[in-house]
Image 1 (tube, rainbow over the protein chains, first blue to last red):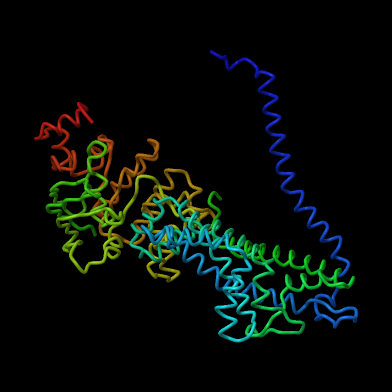
Image 2: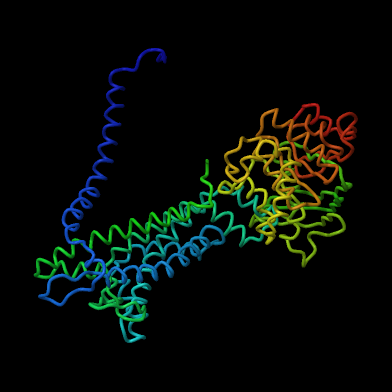
Length: 287
Length: 253
């Protein structure tokens, strides 16, 4: 019988310290590239960010100055449209999978969502091109929104499903036992209980598609001029960054860095804003 | 005001397993009825048949008739949601809505049924919490604290308040004190005593002393059958069935 009153053997102490050390090292290794990328972006991009960059549209080749205002607005527009299409559809599908689905259809939907999640984004772009751009005969922010929306659906649907399945059944029973109709119980009790995780899923999907370039090439297309009409070809930051980065001009390279920095700042701002707004009115689980 | 219950030839199944067999029971208004019996005898299924919660399980089946007041709740054309609105239920494990404040928990049944008048909601919340003997403990943190932040016993009284807020005619309690310590259990029992002046209460319990303390009538279930149903005093002193006597004297179960 090993005695519990004896001090730990040196070997156990060493494994303990080694394990803690290894997990600390792992988290540093995970964080390091993130910090490095952000630091490098700041270093390369901050110098080119000024009022003109944020408020002016691109200058023709050869002229200096100009900015990416149209691409910033365009990205906001396309991502907004994408979220309008993708979030309700994804949450709805997740609710169906977790709460109402039985049998073969659920397996089919789940499998399709997983496959869709693995489809290369350029293929999604082609799909949106065929569905929206070809019938309309022109590129548009709307088509870009459709492409990004399609890409958001599987992530949101699967996280919503997982989060709803984590809500204990006793909570559903409590709601039904009060004589609350099923649909209301699902939306206002079960979904609300899972809301934190569901929002995280939406934010992940949003952040993931925010940097997508390929699906926008055939859909939003890009635009060198001002455009706020969602039915017209629209500039977007990732496209702008791409075309500036592969250009031969030094100033455009600098602007591409600045554009990338702005894109990251936009994503962080959007995610934080949603977190702040949605945390109001809902109690933390253990507050 | 409480209403009576009349159960006739009730049979219930989960898939192919028959859980309840030919149960007949008549309960008068404003009485507390205890349902006792060993684990797996069908007690919980029985109370879940009284407010049509049984059918929320996809495998569930049921035959027979249950009258609450003068309404047959299994008549075709009667909506299960309407039935549950008039019959409150308290579950074994306290299950407050974790993301809602104490106030929102109590108001949930009214609000989610489309009732939204501020003053009346306030009054209903206060009244229900007072009736559930929780008001004094939470009145200062009604909207600040979540239902899940309370202690287990407080959570269960919160769930009782939540059930009372919709003004049910009948209150079903499925082992409401089995997860609680003796002090909280005492509070819940005292509460049941007061509730019966206004409600008809059916309580499932594993604890025979509890049945003896709170109930006017007691029904003993065994293997899905209602073996004996009578005044509590009679069941615990001179039961007419040998199996009841064996159970309450601790010879089995």
